[in-house]
Amino acid sequence: AQSVTQLGSHVSVSEGALVLLRCNYSSSVPPYLFWYVQYPNQGLQLLLKYTSAATLVKGINGFEAEFKKSETSFHLTKPSAHMSDAAEYFCAVSDENQGAQKLVFGQGTRLTINP
Amino acid sequence: DSGVTQTPKHLITATGQRVTLRCSPRSGDLSVYWYQQSLDQGLQFLIQYYNGEERAKGNILERFSAQQFPDLHSELNLSSLELGDSALYFCASSPRRQGAETQYFGPGTRLLVL
Image (tube, rainbow over all chains, first blue to last red; front, side, top):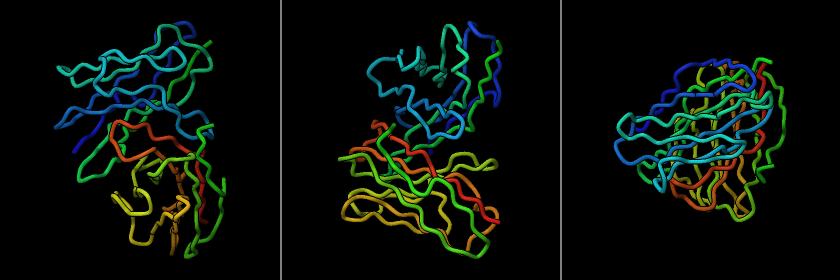
């Protein structure tokens, strides 16, 4: 079964600094991978997704992620953090076992931006 | 705004009671998914419906059930509620049932069982 592991439940960076949120996946087949963001008291919003078209995926709000098969990783980055990036971020893999299309989520990483 | 609506936003009830959560998918989406978000379990898949038919079950308790109606809206029924059922329940929808599709999430229903 597919799974994802997010390294670091809390990440804190200064405004303007690089954001790096780590995600490693486990999958027996080429995976479909997603990053979602959850702002306080809101639902999940898609940041970006990997569907095997290109290994470097650009998303909304300046975020991007690189799929590295050799490292089974899909880390999320943003060159310069903004205060509005403070939120919880979830990495997910699509599990299509037996006709289902469920998302399997990591435990989430809470990103704090220091002024 | 994802286009997925969920009602109610908040629900406070007592142990042993039954509640119904409602979800309207994005216009044209045939698949509906239910997820539970809790502090101890994180985000967990509960169940998927596609065009009215159940497609997959996840970690859904026997006390919970769901259905998708001909107009494609879905309801999640939670019965014999326990304190541990307190969580945020999300509905998501996607156009069909392909793994590469984006699932669009609603704002969630926050359930508090006292």
